Each structure stands twice: as C-alpha cells, then as structure tokens.
Image (cartoon, rainbow, N blue to C red; front, side, top):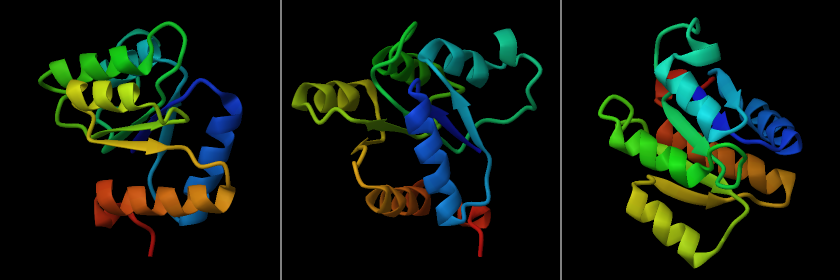
Length: 139
C-alpha cells in the first residue's frame, strides 16, 4: 500500500490516474491532511478499524490544512514504529528552503509535481520502481 497525503482533489485524481497507468498492483490510500494521515498510520480516530499494516511508501504534499507536510514528516520520523516508512515529498514547491527543511526532518526523497501528465506517469514509474517492492509491481 502507498499512502498519498494530498488535500487537492484534482491532484488526487490525476495521481490516481498516473498510478493506474503504470500498472502498479497495490492499493493507493489517500488522506487529505497530516492529521488524518497520522490517524491512518496509527490506526486511530476514524481509521481505528482499518486493516493492520503500514504503507510501503508515504507520498506527502507540504501545504495542507490542519497539519502540514512538514509537521507530519517530523511526527513520522520521530515515531519509532513509523520512522522506517520511506517518506517522499511530492509537492509543487521547488523552494530551496523547503527542500532543506525536508532533508533535515528526514525525508527520503523530494519530488516536484510535473505539469505534464506523461511526465507524471514517468515520475510515478520511477518512484514505484525505487520504493515499492518488486513483488507488488504488475507484470
């Protein structure tokens, strides 16, 4: 499973299409902010009944309501049970200060969302090849 933390419904829709286009055979779970993502990861709040298991990868937007991506990244990397999960920042921000802060907080990678759908498919393919176990890739 991959957890996409993204508040923009259009970005969620396009990301979902890109993941489908790659043939990835794994669940894409979506939460809309860092607070909900933390509940999802800890199986608490409205996610208390979700099936056990951690995502193989967290794709994290930075600018979200309630709890932004920086705060979620910090919380994940400070939690000994969640810290091993790779967190890839997936945002429109290409600001050097955002990249530096994410690196300091423990992000495993930092990717800027492309504007072109084909470029997004290429990026998602590279992303899943690097971070998702091969047994979860569709043949």
